Image (cartoon, rainbow, N blue to C red; front, side, top):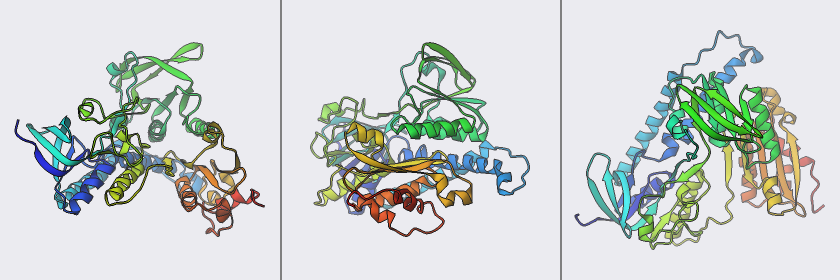
Length: 465
């Protein structure tokens, strides 16, 4: 084997953190290579965040069209064209791909498409997608390996060739009856979208509620939403066996309390979590240690246990969001320039793009109780916000957790229309360490959803007063 090609910067994986690291380093004049096995730009612009929100929005338009009479619109029969839905999504994905390709080329990065495996410290062997092998070494190495959909070890499941979100987001046809295993973000978003396109949908969740990391009132609100949309939901159901083949017919055996029931459908989607892409690439041979769950061990500066090797994004155990991966990049970038940034005590927001949205930042009640943090809570139905009357979207609620003996904002949850924008306003206050009274006493435009924060917090008495 020939000697390794030498680079100052070696980035393995072109996801959010990886691509920004490569672009930035190359723009600063460092000889940079980036290795990507399949999707330039990672999962977000190609197979996950952006494509899913694109398809979900098409489903929302379909839902609004069906409600036309409610808004005084007379419409003929609605027909769903899944090929058209996919055409819109693929156009966006192609535009994203062209942007990433141009940005990478303009930076002067040596982009290597292939699968890399460590063979020596800071040295990888890349099996190229178009044939051949290259050996690459970097003075500094950045790992952005990502994650993939977890496939449970259930008898018959693998043989049934179930879909993950990747295949589900690329369907040119409409399933007659989609069965979704898993009641988390991805499963719920896609279950609702497919139902709105016209399929029968059943969701099977092993836990006691949907979105099991959220408070019980959130789980109950999501369950009501799904029931109202005609989605069958099985809670506390453990899948024991799968028969058939997804795309034709499937039978899912689920232990439901003392008995067992069989759910029959035509298509099967599995969405039960993520597994880091850390196995089989030689990390253990070069001093990069993994934790018990398979994530790369990193410190608060995202340094691994190997010298001059950093890990970012999903593979480092960071919260599995694109915006967190981008923050990981910024922590590493700034520290390499002499800064002292850390991943400790980050205020991480999230949004589940069901319709309406579920958004949260900071602690919820479940977490506060777990951590023995005393708190006060303010809660307001969305119907009390006048904006919801103008757009006929009264579903949901917002609530804020406040310190028991202080006016500190501990967390905020919103389930309702434009919940993500409400959350951003609260997060800004939390980042600035403002007391809740700053939001209570602010002037928000009328009629907006943010105006609801005044109503929400007007019912709270100041802990200092």
